[in-house]
Length: 217
Image (cartoon, rainbow, N blue to C red):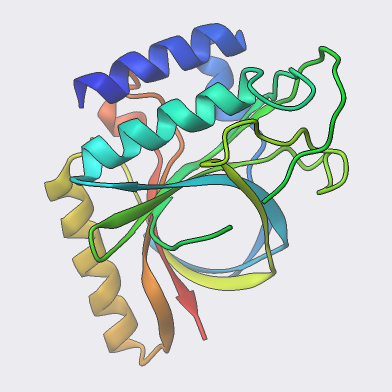
């Protein structure tokens, strides 16, 4: 977890975001259709993400993905434009595909949340949500062809919200609880677990917002 911690420090310092401000980052828009704490069923609106595919253990994969995505939002794009932070960071797996226009200028692009992560067959898909002010036409394009921009269509998810560390054991525990909730409620899902992180690694564990999500059919 130490490398991820270091990257978050650099990421937030470069973005000019203070620790309290992390909670105010833009996140994907959704409606809660049903709630039974700590579980929610959400309907998400479409949103854009920047994503990379990485391999290896979960921590190594998110560290590698984080570096590539941070490089993109801090200016390694076709307009050398800084993109503002958003939340969450997500981790998940899937292969994807993209192109480049030609212009040059210097501006800032916002940070959002979460970062997400999702796994399948030893590969991980790491995403940053892009600020809603952009469209596919106006968002700067990555110079690194490992970074892909895609639109996530409207989807419905079942979610478990929890605090604590980003450890494998904490995530596995809540994945199991979500799976049991899905089974008990006879919900139909597709794809693998999506892990979402909304806070920096130096946030106190009991104050963190983490999530595991499964897409509903």
